[in-house]
Length: 273
Image (cartoon, rainbow, N blue to C red):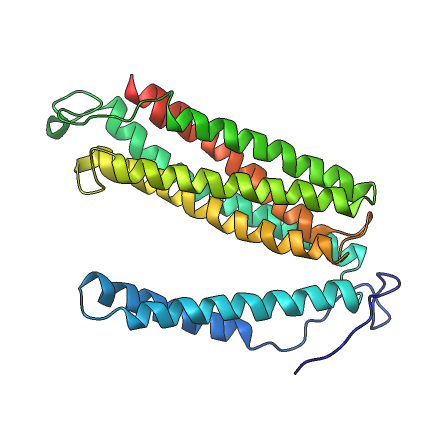
């Protein structure tokens, strides 16, 4: 149901206490249904049965994200529910979420180093395996490294401008960060199209595409996260002392930067030598 709200004058609790008791929401259930439909639809799509299930699932997920984010923005910006105490809990939650994401990448790195440090007969007892034409380290991979490092600088610039209350400058810095994220994804897609191997080409192809592809998915998610923050910054949702939504996006983006440095050094540089 559409409602019109005026921005909260102070970020105190609307219920007279420091904690936020979240109202019942349909979006966790709707999002779960969307994820299930997407998974089943992806299987049907890969089996060349139909693509409609995949399309429907993605549309459900997109609508869920839009509606859920809208509710969170309303609670934080217009209803004043995100008190300092609530924000502490959110910071712990975001830190734990990023920690769980680190474990995903640990598994991929483990698989890569196991295969590269102890090459098996299937790889010809060498690494990179026989018949694999590796991508040039100092071409697109190095350029993408510079792009991501630059984007880490621009997102930090945006944070500085928000803390100083200069929202127009912060918006410009976020637009630049988003543009760098899009360029990174475009270059990675170009790299995938022109690579001489696929995910089916043994342990090298599977570890390469799983690690870099999973990271690319995180760059896409982080870019969407920053796009939302850009609009929120433009509409003055953030305050100098109250902008955890942006801080969470910045933490996530810096995590993506650091993971890419490990990927570049391990897979593109050391793994190709």
